[in-house]
Picture 1: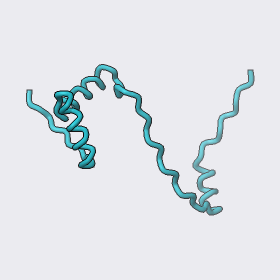
Picture 2 (picture 1 turned 120 degrees about the vertical axis):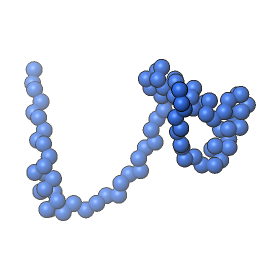
Picture 3 (picture 1 turned 90 degrees about the vertical axis):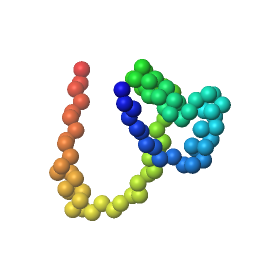
Picture 4 (picture 1 turned 45 degrees about the horizontal axis):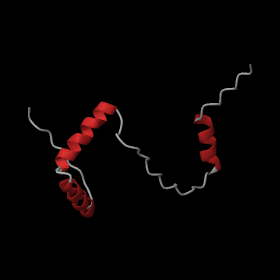
Length: 84
C-alpha cells in the first residue's frame, strides 16, 4: 500500500516545540499524526475535549430601509407555537 501525504502549515515554534515533546515520547510527528487519525476513526470524534475558537464579532453595518424591506421579503415567517 502506498502512503498518502498530508501537508500542514504551522508556526515554526509550534513545530519545534511539538517535535521536541514527541521525540521525548519516542515518536515522530508523522507517527503522532497517524495515532491521532486512527483514534479519530475509532472514536468517530476528536479524541480530546475541543472548543472551537469564538469568531471575532463582525462590525455592525447600517441597514438601510431598502435593505430591511428586501430582508423582510426573503425571510420565512415564524411558525406559530402550538398550544396544548
